Length: 555
Ligand SMILES: Cc1cc2nc3c(=O)[nH]c(=O)nc-3n(C[C@H](O)[C@H](O)[C@H](O)COP(=O)(O)OP(=O)(O)OC[C@H]3O[C@@H](n4cnc5c(N)ncnc54)[C@H](O)[C@@H]3O)c2cc1C
Ligand code: SF4
Image (cartoon, rainbow, N blue to C red; front, side, top):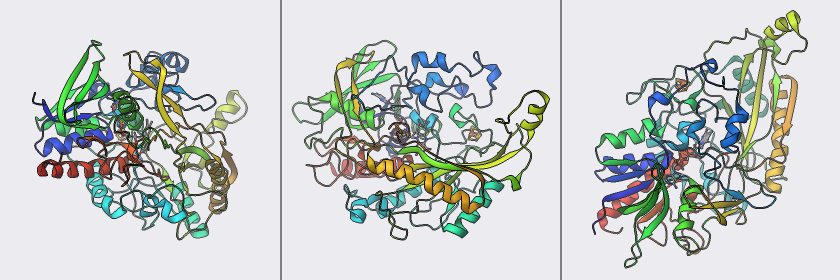
């Protein structure tokens, strides 16, 4: 029987949106399946006040009844909690003594890009070739020069505000005009550069500052994780997926919880997927010439593990292994700048961005740490706010609260090493509400990550002191639980050798030529930069490869 579609894409988020756009615009017929509901502007609540909500956005305990894990994510709130999966219906398990917080499991078209923090950074050649630099782990099978044109293409379309810095540890990109820095951030940036030589720049964020493809520039209302009626931040739902739909060649199948990749026994090739319709609970099949999994690293790997005993496309045995996540807010510091006191205000503007301190250690130019490999950057910001923690009560308290407080806070995001033992497998005893076996996650940070966390607090203080801050407060979270970074990658790594990797450099499985995994599963190392810009650039590159292979008849 002829397959119904040319290409079947599972997942409509950052990676799947790009795949659907690229392939439909090239003339292919695509089925785009997603476990989530359609997203629409009418769901967006960025301009609603808390008093307009039933529970005034104060009912965390209530949300936790159905979303005990998702509620740990800062972006999950009364405004948007129903964009996240119900943890009771869709559980996962963890190995004894190894907690993992699997947050950000959205069930909406657009995936995590509905709620993401939009920080968008390139990986450098050093990030891709970590082993060559310090001997640990493996190099990626791609060079920065392979990715650069795709970073260019993605940045121009997505729209990223930023400042070019000419610092090799964080390659510059195509930036829209920068959102301004606050006075405190400007002072911090200048003094840190002068005294330490480190670069604190504007966060490179996927928020428009000029009109782009019919999308309006950001008007600084603030809470992008609740949606955006002017489509001013990058959300696949109203950008890449909308473009794919406009071609007339994309068939969107929402509420489709994909269970397995189906194989043609005669050819051994993928012939489609089976899924459970979330609304009717019926099992269905869709067929296509090529299957692309873009369901987010852990979810795509779960589909492969559920598709064959021992996992589909797993002749290497490494499927599910080398799970990584960033050390999120592991350590850092804050400090006050009373000399900058301005007046605090409840009004805007609320710039949806902050600052970013570029990695400065364990690089060819920087000092080498004796305590840890790889590096970390800082995210943060500086602003003037009310003194809400002022002591006292009554009139004295009201007056004290109005005393403005100008401070800067920076929090470290660090690279987690790729380790074989950090892995996921199917839990033999637990299924979700659709009857699909769930993941059992086994991950721990190690001594390298803990040493990095200690260092984040130390260098955070160094920067505050260099900037002349008062009341400098370091912090460190030595027992940070993995998962909080919400940047899970690496569980179907790419490589040249089919014996040690699941995917080739174009995210095509070594074992099955018409099966690709085009999300963050392919990462060989994680760097310290947020991963999504790289995920999107890799997906676009892989689509180019797929189209040329289709033309040659190789797939
Ligand atoms: C709160 C938050 C903040 C973040 N901030 C940043 C940031 O600042 N910078 C950054 O780079 N990254 C950030 N991220 C991470 C970023 O969102 C992800 O890296 C990115 O969206 C991953 O893209 P993806 O295509 O792999 O998956 P997603 O964008 O998550 O899309 C996956 C899609 O697949 C669907 N799906 C899952 N399982 C199935 C199934 N079995 N069948 C069918 N469909 C399925 C899901 O419903 C979803 O729509 C953040 C994430 C969160 C949650
Ligand atoms: S801050 Fe900007 S991008 Fe975010 S919701 Fe408001 S207008 Fe949209």
